[in-house]
Image (tube, rainbow, N blue to C red; front, side, top):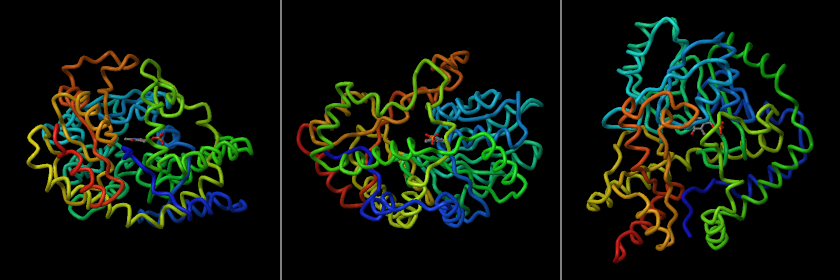
Length: 394
Ligand SMILES: *Cc1c(COP(=O)(O)O)cnc(C)c1O
């Protein structure tokens, strides 16, 4: 079974995980991460969402409206709610997955505190347009959500630099991973100091129990993505047996993981730091496999291909199909697990249900039609998948 995602972890990460702990493990990871992103400061958190929640507090935002995409990871509005602010959802562009910045600008009023600009699926946010918005509304903070981007570039400019701060998610489904974890980067010393103070006051020090749980999880993940084992896992996942492990949100509630207030632990930081060295290779692989798909999927008329954009990092390669269920099932029979991200339009979800579907028609449409092809393995993986997709019956 070819898995829909696969963390790039190997012997290096394994050795880093079992190494004896050092007091400055987390700081060393932060320094390497800041350097990789070309930013002055980086601060580690147990999850990206915990970081976002504290960042809004560090920016002095409370009771504000925070503009964010309708089509993004649902943990983002959850973090906004947990920080005592209110999300305002904006539809996607007509010809891309990112938030429509024209609509976002229209939504600005005196209650607006920040705009969360997300480079969804690794497609860089339009920094020129964002710059214009910043000029016209200088009191509003721009936060870059780089959980899918990891240094996607708009006309050569890395997106994470163009705002007050950037957030990253680092679980095993992300471009880089530290088992779980999240990071905030910034060039602003004042924000860095405030955020660090809040974090160090509010987060519990990770204890042995957490480190132990993380090591166990890592040891389980390590072999899990190996083809034959993954086939079994996939069957368990589909039968609902694995829901406990793969579920990252609850449709009906605004909630956080039980350990969202326990700081990042040393083992996570060591794995993350080891993973950083693979960044170039990981991004190159993703660009190569995307290029391969663009070239060879063009003749599959069932698929509407995504935009091809220079500087994108392709956390996901997302095509649109009329009948998603059918494609997911067909692919499984061919030994390929396709993803179905992002399968919801947040304003339609129960806890945010005050909005109507018509408010974000593009997000609603994408939520029903997108499937993602695996991007973790370079052109070789691409050719294998294309071959299978072209087998008769497809
Ligand atoms: C993963 C992700 C985050 C952060 O997720 P955590 O699980 O809290 O680390 C934020 N935004 C987007 C778009 C994501 O995909």
